[in-house]
Amino acid sequence: MAKIPDATITRLVHYLRALERMEKAGQLRTSSDELARASGVTAFQVRKDLAYFGSYGTRGVGYTVPVLRRELAQILGLGRRWRLAIVGMGRLGQALADFYALSESYELVAGFDVSPEVIGRQVGPFTVEPVEKLPQIVPESHVEIGILTVPEAAAQQAAEALVAAGVRGILNFTPAILKLPEQVAIENADFMAGLSRLSFFMLNPRWREEMMG
Ligand code: NAD
Image (cartoon, rainbow, N blue to C red; front, side, top):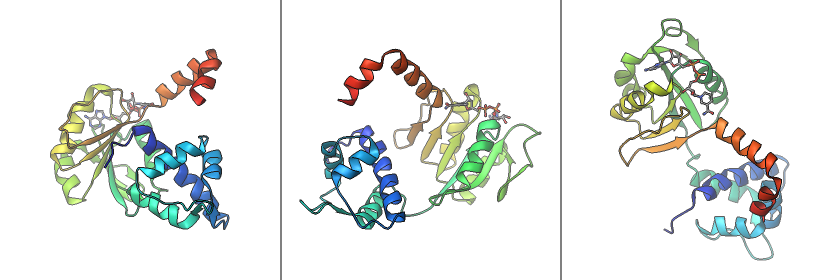
């Protein structure tokens, strides 16, 4: 398989959302032009991104909305539910817990903390557990993805504990640069970087126009 650019995967998520909206509205067919407009990219980009994964559209006919929606969901691993645990049930951890509780593809099954103020708190279907219990609870609960929302200084150790317990994917909200075995997928989520990009482009509007082509 050709090496797939990171940005392609992000755009697939945007195409999937656009297709979900179309399917909800009862729309049966779409085109690369329409998908491009709905996702803020060019039609060429849509065709190029989808071509990495096979040939989906028919020239002159376009794409069947439910079929492409299902294919993209499958490619993105959303054809099943993933079990998540959050380490660090502070402000961000609790906010994310509320958010993930609404998700169809992800099931939050455990949360860990070190603070006696937080441990024992009921969050949706589970009770926040002391982090010492992570090595036991993560394999027992078949957790596959760990979400890191601890202070930066605690991040590497918490990530290593998750990996030692069998987790193979980490969504890292901390500013720490994690060093983990190669087979562990790490995704860094950074709202602050988004704000800095925004202020940069507000000061330099021409750069944004040039990047958009
Ligand atoms: P917070 O202090 O409210 O929560 C941190 C929680 O982690 C606390 O409940 C604390 O008791 C717990 N904790 C500390 N050490 C731990 C350990 N070893 N194991 C388990 N739990 C532990 O902080 P917050 O505002 O929720 O921020 C959490 C993290 O998210 C920080 O690293 C912060 O920098 C980061 N953050 C990132 C973004 C972003 O844009 N990515 C935005 C906000 C916060």
